[in-house]
Image (cartoon, rainbow, N blue to C red; front, side, top):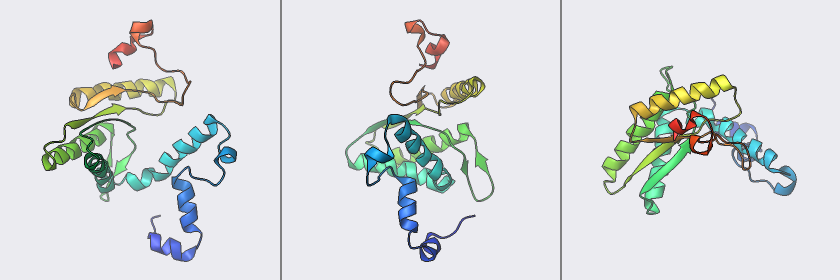
Length: 184
């Protein structure tokens, strides 16, 4: 159940500290809190799960992406290629948006940004869902990717299954792997 932030703060004086701990990796003794890459990676991924409901609200989702573009633009970055997941996005009418519609939100926000900033060169999206899933789910991710490429060929740049450093990645057909070259 949603509650106003000022109400939560008034009910608990330690709420801001709790919120900071849920949204950042910042701790007093990181060498103890994160003794190895596995622990820090898991904490990092948990942050995304924590903020999913916050940024999954459609107007916030669109404003968040627009603001990312704005801050890059102000730093004189004129092109962005970024990896992203496609979490559930919702609105107050009870609608939820699927992966294709979410990329449409990215794409339409980018179009508006380019209209507002004609000298901005653009952005491209690399679909990068979580890796630790079943083979069937990976197959579903690949199907989604091909649909995204079909609908947004100038925006969707690729597919990646991100994992912490030194983890197994998809092989390309060029290196003797499977048909994953179709994803490149």
